[in-house]
Amino acid sequence: MASEGGEKPEVGSNQVAVKKGKGWVVPLLRVVAFLATLAATIVMAMNKETKTIVVAVIGSTPINATLTAKFQHTPAFVFFVIANAMASFHSLLMLVVECFGNKFDFKGLRLLLIPILDMMIVALVAAGEGGAVFMGELGRHGNSHARWNKICDKFESFCDHGAGAFIASFVGLILLMIINVISVLKLRNQLKTAANYSALP
Amino acid sequence: MASEGGEKPEVGSNQVAVKKGKGWVVPLLRVVAFLATLAATIVMAMNKETKTIVVAVIGSTPINATLTAKFQHTPAFVFFVIANAMASFHSLLMLVVECFGNKFDFKGLRLLLIPILDMMIVALVAAGEGGAVFMGELGRHGNSHARWNKICDKFESFCDHGAGAFIASFVGLILLMIINVISVLKLRNQLKTAANYSALP
Image (tube, each protein chain N blue to C red):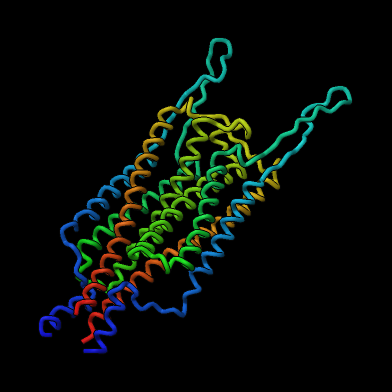
C-alpha cells in the first residue's frame, strides 16, 4: 500500500509516464518542417523574373516591351507565402514551447493546444498549397476552354522557382501531418499508460 | 478496498468514464458536415452552363458560337469535387463507426484512427477549397498581368453556382475542424479522468 501511494500521485499530477527515449523525434521533425516551409516562403517571395521581348520592328528599330512576372501578381501565390510564413513561425514557436514549456505548463493546456494549432496549420498550408499548385498548373499548361494561355514558356525560371517552392511546402505539409499523427498517438499512449496504472491492483 | 477494486477494472479496460450527456454533438456535427460537403460535391458536379453568342454577322445571317463552361474543364474544380465527395463519404463512414463501432472496437484503435483520418480529410478539403477558390477568383476578376481575362461576365450562373459550392465546402471544412478539436478534447478529458481515477487514495 505504501509503494502504491508513492506511485500514484505521479500519474495524477498529469506527468504520466512517457517513453523518454524518442523525445527527439518530434523536435527534429519540427525543425525540418520549419526549414521546409521557410524555404518555400523565401523561394516564392523572392520569385521575380523580368524579360524584355521585341514586340514590333518599325523600320530597323525594334520596339521592346519589358514584362515582369512577380508572385504578388497572383493572389494564390500571396496566400501561399503568408500560409508558409505562418507555418514556419508556428513550427518555431512549438519548438520553443516543447523544449522550454515544461516549466510553465498551465494545467496540461499545452498538450491540448499543440494538436489543435497543428491541425489548423495543416489546413492553412494545405489550402495555400492547393491554390498555388493549381495556379501553377494553369501557368504551365494554360486552359484552352477559358482562353487562358500558358505563361511558363515565357517565364521559365519563374515557373521553375515556383515549382521548387511547391515541393518545399509539400514536404513541410507532410511533416506537419506526421507530427499531428504523433501527437494523437502520444495522447493515446498516455491515456493507455494512465489506464494501466490505475488498473494496478 | 473492495469498492476500489470494483471501480478500477472499468478504467483499465479502456472504458474510461466519458460524459454521456453530450454524445449527440459530434454525430450531429458529422451529419451537417456530410450534408455540406455533399451539397458542395453535387452543386459543383452539376455545374454546367451553355451559352450561344453571336460572333459575327455575314450579310444578315448571324454566326453563332456555342460555348460551354463545365467544371471538368478546370483541374482545380475536378479536385474540389473529388475532395468533397471523399469528405462526405468519410463523414458517413465515421457516423456509422461512431454509432455502431462500440461493439467491435479493436483495442481502442477507433479512438486513434478517427482523429487521424479526420485530420487528413481536413487537409484534403482545405487543399481542394484553396485550389477552387483561387481559380474562381481568377474567373471572377481575371489577371491582367498574365493576360487571363475574366469569364464570369459571360458565364454568370456558372460562377454563382461555383460560389455556392465553395461556401458549402467551407462550412463543411469548418465543421470538420470543430469535430477534430472535439476529438482531441475528448481524448484529453479521458486522460484526465483516467489520471484522476488513478490518483484516488
